[in-house]
Length: 337
Image (cartoon, rainbow, N blue to C red; front, side, top):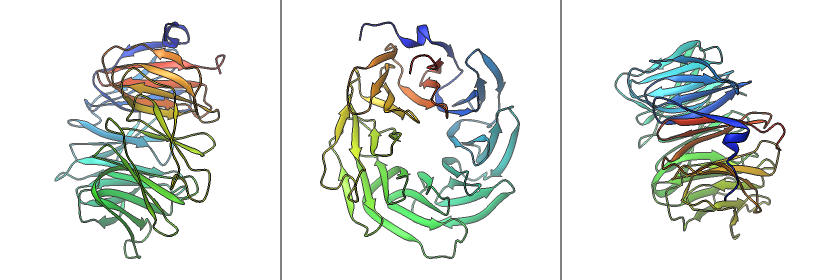
């Protein structure tokens, strides 16, 4: 791609103090959670505020919160919520552990935190329930209606009812280390990323499992297309798309691809209302691609730093980017899409 980078024409780039762990839009502000334990807010026009010391140590994980906020977890054992104005509140502190996984449901107004082998359910008032697992919890996700949550761990996934730790739980077993988990929009399938270069999934109706392998690199990101028909995945130079249009999902089907980067894809984010996606690579290149293939537009040139975060605003007008070195940016696509 030889065209000018969109970051130079419809955006701006800036440097943050550490690795961007996540980027999350709250209205017209994007909150960047960085590995030094801080959270920084930006608008399209400039920096809004910085909150240092959200964590006393490294910030390890972050997710969109269950209200208009962002949740962060650190090696200090703290789960914090930060809103668009920069107000910080503590939801829980677990001094004997670190927080390596978070998930939240705005529908249920609940969050889940991975505290060692436990998944702790949190509300605005603090801890509500605790669910023990046989291995360290590495990924958490609520189903769309917020009633159940899935915990990824070594050996598979455990699905629990968030409101009742005594209710019957569902185990989805597959040998190996499962790192993150995602539900389909209709809660009919669950997919995990694995330590090995593969995805694994289950159809929940009957427990039928399926394996999606052949990736040349670790799969660091998943994102569903705006129509929920395709699951876009990082891990190859092309964005790999798995079909979820029918009752069998990708079972017995082949993947499609969308565009190509110059290095393995490390971040992907589908546009919320258009059939396009943003993809970033291990060398810092970021491109805008049509879902299913077509001409790609260069968002940012390669600069040697892995892309770690891509996030569209809810209306799809703005895109936030973040990288391993702290390089970040905001683009305004109002007149471009």
